Length: 376
Image (tube, rainbow, N blue to C red; front, top):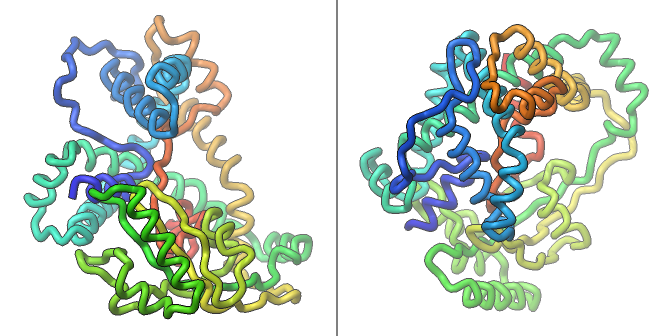
């Protein structure tokens, strides 16, 4: 249960992981920076540094290497916290707090449902047992969701909906090759969890299943028997036979696209390793793309938005900083200011954790609503 909670929270809580801070020495807080009416404190910086060190250790660095790198990056982390505070303030001014809180509640309930936990009190207890502070997790989720909501509404939506018919047609005419219908693929999966198990034993079982599938065994039957993909607290493969759907190749995650790249219809992939388990994929069908470009207004708007978004987000952050009252402690001012002046400071500082998604994962999903359009 502990490992499952860890995996689910890491997946839903992107990118930071909020753990309980029991046992830390309490110090009198020092104000590092004032951001309008809010402050960045020493304890906030230390917490951010601790999470960054943990993330680097999970990527294979020693504690000494991770600590050295994060210490060197401290000014950048402080700048990131200032950016984060500005986005939180902007979100409140835009009236996004209620929607963000509803999304936090939805994600917490999703964690509970996937674990078969029926009450929030039960979820709190399970998270506590796994070393997570429930309220800290909620706050980290709240921050990440708010930052994305502000950028989606104040930057991406303005690009998406502000394009004229003339701009759309001109872009399409000069990028026709980008609007050919891409190849699609229908996939099935078998997922084996590592939670509470010996990895070598799980990998041996995975290799055995792959061998059976490649030797002609029914993949759907193997999925129904072995797959451990959960939904609403229940195994789903006995019902779905492992089928996950039809996807355009460009929308697949890079690791999934690479795993099936050379597979023909009926082919079975090598195991894909994630933090929480192994995934085996089968190509049920390949549907060829078309060489004839097709004009689709939404797709053109999405393409232009994706192309301009990064630059516009940097400009947006520069304006927020210019319009804000930001006073940095003299001790840190010289090292932090360059990151704020160039727009180079990231809005977040923790590394994403690897997770085992279904094959539906869209690489640009963080910038769009469910229909592919940024939210107004």
